[in-house]
Image: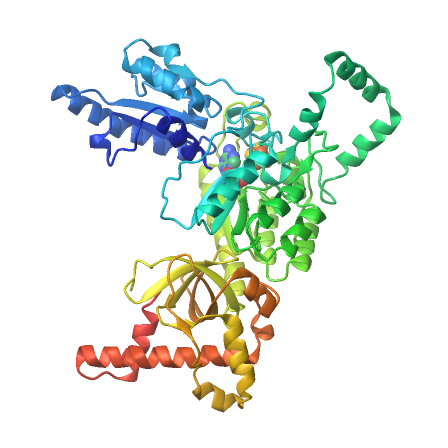
Length: 583
Ligand code: 5AD
Ligand code: SF4
């Protein structure tokens, strides 16, 4: 469940419902992020627009519009939002959503202004574990599940530990209950959410055991623990839990905790036909056991977000990231070994304090060499309270930052283009989620396990990959015959929520895979027949490649016939255009 869904659930329980537009709403709540300056700038703009709507209502003597600022920006700016300009009527931080109905009622009754209309208290415990989701869009195939909140890492540039508070994990049982409920509702893909997801550590089972112990016993036990050398050794072992070459400024007690690997394993087992993704992780917590769990479960997607922030060890040290370039490269190598064809994405900051040209070049080198499928590159913006704001100079001139941003973007595109060349001829398992905006009448779209957008022509396909395999292998035709011999067994039409095996024909834009649908399938069937959910072109079985060629030829012929019918006679060139126009 995302923050918006938590807010939706809290308000729905208090008889609020969603308005269709701002004009029809009595209350507008802006859920905000303060992580970078431009995210905040957008909210200031939106608050300005809402002022105009407030004035319009006052002028026409309509009931007033109440505006609330929620989330990180609320925590960061607190009273400034409620000051004389009165841009907001209420301000509620990320750990205080349960208090929303009370604050709203007080503001509506005219009883609360200024600090009385504000709750920005951060909590050590709040995980909203007991709040069941009200899904924002029940027709969608995917949903978010919040598993932890806050972050203790204190990266030098980052405001999150100050706006979202200390790291705390939601109890495993409550996560599993929510995942089971979503599975029963027919959701096909969940994303586990948190500021630092793979640092997940749940102690609730230990706390339950402890509740049976009296407080004096607990005190004795705690005293002994501090004195016990064996215990200290165990703590050391817990600290060496990090991926090799990674460290953290904070030393969490992990002894006995349910960690992210165990959580992921349990979530994956809830429904092997429901895909599992997670975001955002920290590279330090990609331990070998987590990589192993991802590899073991075909329904855990082979897409890892690995925020590097920089490719230079000296810069990483200034950023207080807890790893060197070499350690990061080592992790990428291990991940690619354990998870062949895994897609990688990253976050990068350009122009952080004191960045030299050499450090910048090291980051460009990282982007070119690692070859990311996706990269989010930001110009550094100083945020209040952070280590950098207090101790380092934001001394890279704005024009140098934007030049470096452009350089890094070019380096990323170069690596991505090289990866895209490997896509043609690959076989992916796509989950269909709707129709593309262009040519939506004839096409369907979905996502591969590696998060790439997949577009296929809508056409009947074999009802199962296994049936297609048996048909093709049973025929024992030579390749040329088989190319002409289309599958003649049971077929299905495809729709949203279906899994389909696809063969990539072309990459358009930066990463959209124009593909041929091969057969309807399931996650388990696809993995059983093909051994993984992303199959390299050189490992694709001949029977499937031939089926792909035959299906592509049939689609091209159908498109040519349709074009000819529409224009009263078409050339080959025109039928080609019909296919290309899918993307
Ligand atoms: N300036 C620019 N980018 C930042 N990020 C976090 N803080 C800042 C900042 N002060 C980026 C990091 C992080 C992503 C979510 O936002 O790359 O991973
Ligand atoms: Fe911010 Fe991520 Fe670092 Fe936490 S780990 S401080 S959220 S950049």
